[in-house]
Image 1 (cartoon, one colour):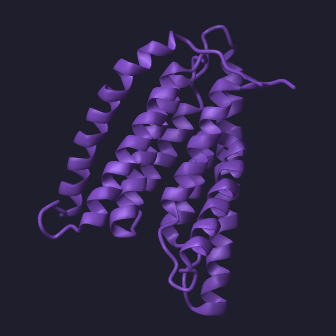
Image 2 (cartoon, rainbow, N blue to C red):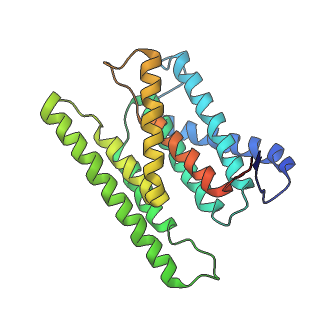
Image 3 (cartoon, helix red, strand yellow):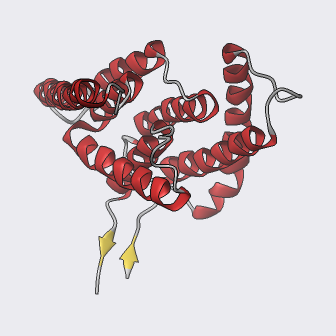
Length: 227
């Protein structure tokens, strides 16, 4: 049995979910405009369905984040908004713009300073240094893998956008971000095996974001599992 604690009655989800869904749909429209995309007629039905699915999934994640009991739910909500933008952009175009990934990384480092007033300022500085170290280590690891893949096969694996996004995830989550990246790699691998498109590759960003959302929600709720 799994026990969860909420910050408000679960019935509030009925009001939060449509609000967040509307917000994400508006964001999706702005993202399409920024990317030069339109839903008619140049964008395929698959892309329209992808956008709808991403909006619904992230609206659910945002609702769960705001229902969580911890004071860190507000930074988690903004992290989910960053992940939404990165996921939708990568899913529709196969690209992760440097400006967005670096902005996400910098915002994650700033969010690491978020601490209750009851905690000493030194704890915020310690958290910042820990998150910075986690991000730098991840950038080094994924950047090294990218360099090796270029030397051996002449192609990026992971791509540069994935490298920066991995670092951004660790900037938000600290060393827990390594679990998120690992989950993302696992989900991406399972998707490739299921779709039998391993030679073609595909967008890694959405699966990395999925791993980040899973770890974020787990840390927010800290579920008590009893037997």
